[in-house]
Length: 311
Image 1: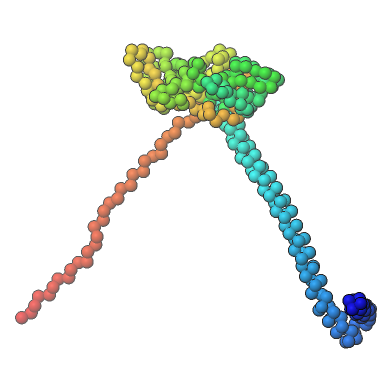
Image 2 (image 1 turned 90 degrees about the vertical axis):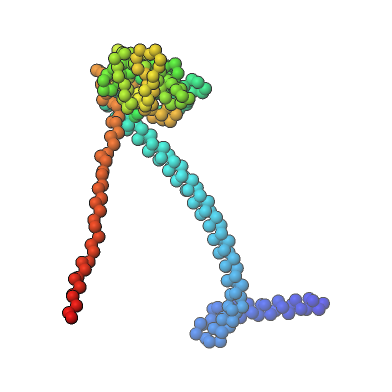
């Protein structure tokens, strides 16, 4: 009974406060008494309301920040992917530009293709994303911006297989610049354990080689087995063999066969031998600057004569 009576008293008090608040809300705001009532009740109930609002805003901001962070992370991933693609495109564009310059110098028509696979083991081949449907044929020469890559040995409708020029079974007829003397290069020429060195053997005993001489593919009818004038490499070392009738040398190929990307398939060979038009310019050391330093004697103050003593 006592609890029920206490409950009724509390409810009556709350109803009275509610009625006062309603009257205060609709009464004239100029009444000072009502203003004090509204102010007091606002102080009591407003704190709880503000606290609830702050908590709501906190969770609202937390949810918004979480979604924003997720969105920013997704944007960052997209930007990274775009940047990576831009770098790849930039590299491919540079290689394509160099390849077109070489094709122009050699007066050949090429079809651009990309390396999509590398042969396993000792095959020393690569696969291209261009096939017979694009105009690729067996026997065509393949080059890039640095020089000779190889020749096509197999073709499907959409792909081609290229035997690289540094393969151990390949023999390439070459001409030495600027003399034009003929010889042949074999690869990979694992001289002294180095797999990046080809071996050159000259045809004529009268041919004289020098370190730095450049090699291009030699004259060939109908562009077989390679079109003429494509840079092959540069002589790095003369090799002496007992009983050899002609000179031999080690050759560093211009092409990095481990980093092939964009290449060109020669569709139309040159109308005439371009000879050495496509070889890269040889590096020329700059003039040696000699500085002569002349030592200058240090200036010493001249000593004034000492006057003689007068007796």
